[in-house]
Amino acid sequence: MHPLLRPVTVILVALTLISCDEKQPRFEQAEPGEALSGGDATVMKFDHNAFSMPAANLAPVRRLDFSVGNSFFRNPWVIAPSSTTARDGLGPLFNTNACQSCHIKDGRGRPAEAERGNAVSMLVRLSIPGGAEHAEVLHERGIAPEPTYGGQLQDMAVPGVAPEGKVRLTYTTHVERFTDGYEVELRSPQLSITNLGYGPMHPDTQFSVRVAPPMIGLGLLEAIPESAILANADPDDSNGNGISGRPNRVFDQVTRDTSLGRFGWKAGQPNLNQQNADAFFNDMGLSSTLFSGRSCTEAQTDCLAMPHGGEPEVSDHILAQVLFYSRNLGVPARRKVNDPQVLAGKTLFHRAGCQSCHMPKFTTGEADEPELANQVIRPYTDLLLHDMGEGLADNRSEFEANGREWRTPPLWGIGLTQTVSGHSQFLHDGRARNLLEAVIWHGGEAEPAKQAVLKFDSAERSALLAFLESL
Image 1 (cartoon, rainbow, N blue to C red):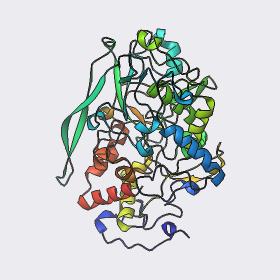
Image 2: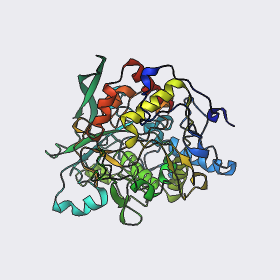
Image 3: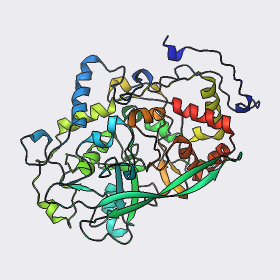
Image 4: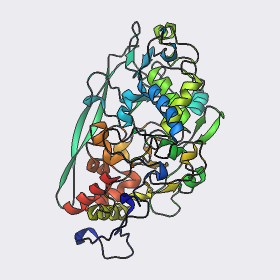
């Protein structure tokens, strides 16, 4: 038996952390297999490469394909025309020249104010309020793009083309106070876009700041049966628990029909291949069979006039290799699952109601990669949309997600963020500088959970954070 799975008897001496009410959840030891967040695909790597390992059950012969996909994910694309024909066509407008530049070590991005130079691992999505004249684009893209700058601000460009603008964040702060008087300073981002390259934006432009999410376990999330996700949806809160998660319905470029959204901060993409192709197109200006043409708008004539790297610039072969790589990045095992403080924090996590959205466990169904099929996984997400309150609202809709809704992000691997990414900034725009700030930013449907946490004393706060850091 693996040592991470060995049951132990735990005596909890911190009685303040555990209620005597037997109706409340109480965890005194880890569940069988709880350490293996990704099932048999879980990896035993906990250093700065923890998010970059192939699934543990990936056959050796298939690891070669993983390495090939990794090379396309890591290596930069170049400007066309070039002798490097397999990797040319970058831009003309873009945010980065390689996938790895945003997902550094396959981990989490950070806000622009913490970067040197351009934003790189942070994006700004753009749109305007949609009307009847936008019906077709709303159906296919879920938004009405800003007329001059499109659906995403691209702050880099090839020579001869003006970048769309420069992005920076500044912050205002306010304090939240726990019942015992402990104070947490929260910061609210203020977006600034300067040096607009193509004139003023539409006066009603909506902005949404997004940092790059971690890459681990995406193939496992894709393999969760749709029925299992929809079973947790409760859009009308029929059970009266205050949680009304609902699915996003988005456009599938292959089937040309609507499908369940799973990926992206608002679950705006139906599958991992389309998520990857969209990133190639909007982040790097590279066409594929899913997204052809240029990411330039009609107003950006210099951009439209530049040479391209062929059509498509990202061949189906390369897209398939990147898909294989991104599907098979393993999830690190949990640490200290039987530590008394971690178990106490798990109890508090459930008692506050956090598991209502951050659902601990699913079983995958059939999968395109056999290693990912029929795995008991613990991603701590329901993949549904939830109203997170005005404080986190971007006031920008995306398909059926409104301006206050976000998809529940998976928590697996979150305790290794500092180790892998070199920072501890969380939430969709990186405003939270640590996990406690991230928790206290929760509002809307999560307001009761936040209020429960605000009643925690010092020992309870430490236990909750120990649990989260074990994930």
